[in-house]
Amino acid sequence: MILMKDIVRDDQEGTVLRDYAAKVSFPLTEEEQQLAKDLMEYLEISQDEELAEKYGLRAGVGLAAPQVNVSKQMAAVLVPSDDEEDDTPIFKDVIINPVIISESVQMGALTEGEGCLSVDRDIAGYVPRHDRITLKYQDVQGETHKVRLKHYPAIVCQHEIDHLHGVLFYDHINKDNPFEAPEGTVFFG
Image 1 (cartoon, rainbow, N blue to C red):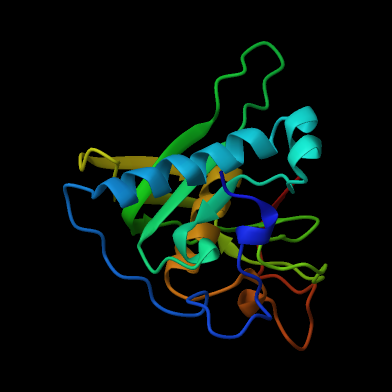
Image 2 (image 1 turned 45 degrees about the vertical axis):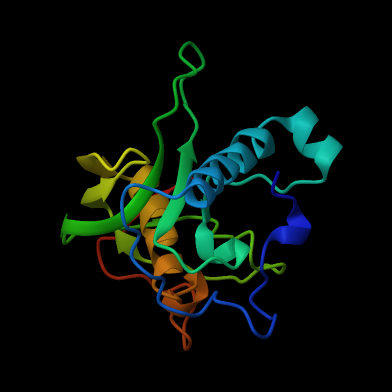
């Protein structure tokens, strides 16, 4: 089980957090299969208030392998339902070797800015991302998926893919004017 102590922080030296992660080959090794399970398990437990408190976890909707110091293009994403009558997640999968194959011109951003399990401080500012993307990735069985995502799930997946490329959310914040966003940006949350 992944705990907060296992998650690499952006101010730690000697980690793979800022490296471009290696592509994953199939079939997955037993170690890679376990990593995929552990990443998703963290998200599931962290989104359960009682269990998160019990294990001292910060809630998350995404966790990438480099955040646990493994240089592999693998991330778990679990965007919970926003429908009170249907608790089916909006998006839930372990995305392996993900590639954004198309993106909207329209940008989107979270009103409150973004956070990250690897960043222990609040960093103010808008993080402009593409509002809609088409994502191509492989699942743990090696099957290829192509999905269209918009709004919050698109933002989450772009955040996780950034981790696989050694990029952190605050790298996207305008240094001169953190609350400046491209014209026409749609805000969520």
